[in-house]
Image 1: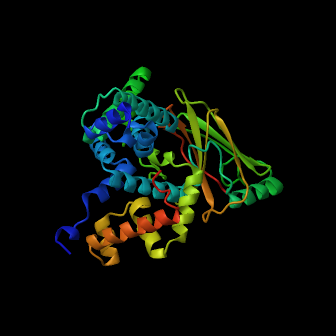
Image 2: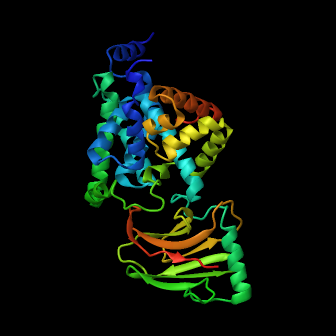
Image 3: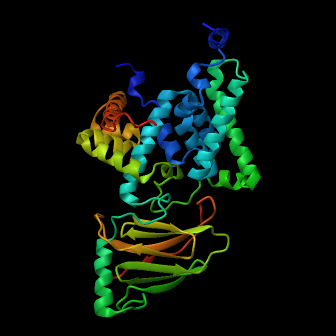
Amino acid sequence: MTAESQQPAPDERRIQDYLAGRLDDSEAERFEERMMADDDLAAEVQQALDIRAALTGVRSAGTRMDKRAPGGTLLALAAAAAVSMIALGVHWLRPPEPVFRGVQPVAGFDVEVEAAGGELRARWTPVAGAAGYELRVLSDDGRVLERIEVEAPSATLDLGGTDQPSSPSFLEVVALDELGQVLRRSNRIALIR
Amino acid sequence: MTEADQLSGLRNGEGQTSSDAVDPAGLWNRFHSRLLMLGMRRLGSRVDAEDMAQETVHRVAEALGENRLREPAALPAFVFQTARHVCQQWLRKRGRERRALERYGREPPAADAAVHPLTHLIDEERRRSVRAALESLEAEDRHLLEQLYARDVEPEQLARALQITPGALRVRKHRALKRLAAALGGTVTE
């Protein structure tokens, strides 16, 4: 093995940085120019992107491209919702009240959440300049378990079965501009069961 | 052989470009995924990136048809510059260039920081196929690819953790990628 082979190939980290958006614009442009001329590099970047997207999909279970919640959804949340609706009815998200519905004025727009009939419904005050919104359900360690992108300031998530290993603990809404970039982000609302 | 055939052969022989590159389908197959990444990064939308890719291939094919590319080796650079030009035109038309470029790479850290816009190029069906292919790999291969490409573990760090040299890691990675490609039926690169 040569001394050179003891070092990581520069492209390996470059690929990681490119796909993670860590290159500045001029670096990314140079990388793309090289990739355009190097079929092997392009193939590896494509593979890396495939893997990244596939495994990211496991963690985020849905994509912005889908425009809908995927099939595997929030069993724990559904159970909690059912219990909440049957035993407690609808309550505001203000501990120590039994809660599964709430209004929280955050960062300039309010989010209201309600669980009923096997669905999680949310609505919020429209954000100026927003072309769409993304509703996210997160685990207690901050991972995105579920997401749905909508144009109107409301969304409904199907609370069907889920294969998620973690229970949903928080909900947040982000306002997106026409490029899909985050304009504003709400504070997270705890989903208390 | 007709005069046209001879002329065609002469053109190729003189290095106008390779015959597959003149063919728009050949151009498309070779550069499509690269153009999508380039377009997605600049335009922020898969639909727009697809439109940009189509327009770029159309313009390049047109230029090749008019013999405007003399040096075959310059084809990738020509495609790249054409794509950049198409993106710039598109962004200027909508007044988005400054915002799009400024926003790239400075998204605030979030719970799903690993989800970069480029990953949105991969649709759910493809993700499922890749996940299934990854599941079919040996745990060692799967772990290595996940650490490198999904968790962004630095190659040196991963090599140290595996108690191998970076060179050996690179070899393992290439073998794992080959096995993944085989598991996908050779459909990793479109």
